[in-house]
Amino acid sequence: MSITEHTPRRTRADDDAWRRLIDKATAPYRAAGRFAWHFARGKLGRDPVFRGMLERGDFGQGGRVVDIGCGQGLMVSLLHRGAELAREGDWPAAWPAAPVVTAYTGIELMPRDVQRAQASVGGLALTDSERPRFVCGDMRHTDLPPCDLVVILDVLHYVDHAAQDALLMRVRDALRPNGRLLLRVGDMDDLRGFRVSQWVDLVVTWVRGHRAPPTYGRSLAQWEAALLALGFRVQLVPMSAGTPFANVLLVATL
Image (cartoon, rainbow, N blue to C red; front, side):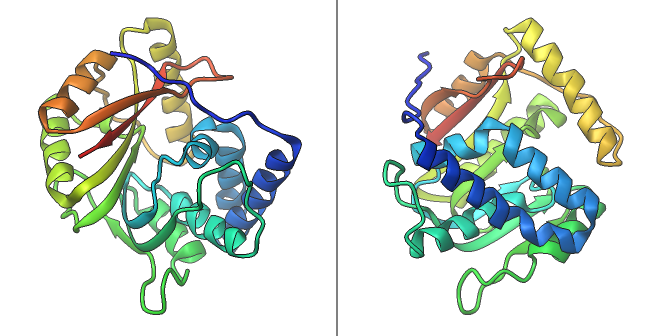
């Protein structure tokens, strides 16, 4: 097991472009109320995973995206606005090409988050005929459409290990050949960071108006082994820079 660090060196111009992208991606959330807008800006501004995935090209070309645990749909807004800025020539030259989303399905258990997503980004024109699709449902039972990319950030630990394995198998079956899964997890072997992550999880869940369910962690080696057994190639990317957490992004490709 090896962890790779390969985020490009950041310049002031890149920082400025990222701030413009945050402004564009979060602007639609004003339509869903002050909470939705402030939450979107805080999430993009403080969580290193979003900028990191764009800088490294983790999204690949994009295509048909399934976002499990999508919350208020921030991912589709980020990717869609990023593609717009790239077409306008406002994309960092050092970054890989901006991914283009041609279809998007967001799956979210909490009805209020789905309502915020619909109110803010439900009308985005991904193509001439495609709009984001938001499904209020349990990830354990919701159908996954055929796709090129699946994103699961910080939610898989809410279901037990058997359900985790079953969902990962369904993800593998939904992905096209060479499709990709972006899975962020906490490393349970990093006891201090994992506990901090769990505490923050509880607070954020409460702030969003939900009750936090029990969690089912694994060590990083166990997460990697589960994906390898399903036929994925796995790259491990640290996702805790500037934070006290034990987060790692698993970039898994069929």
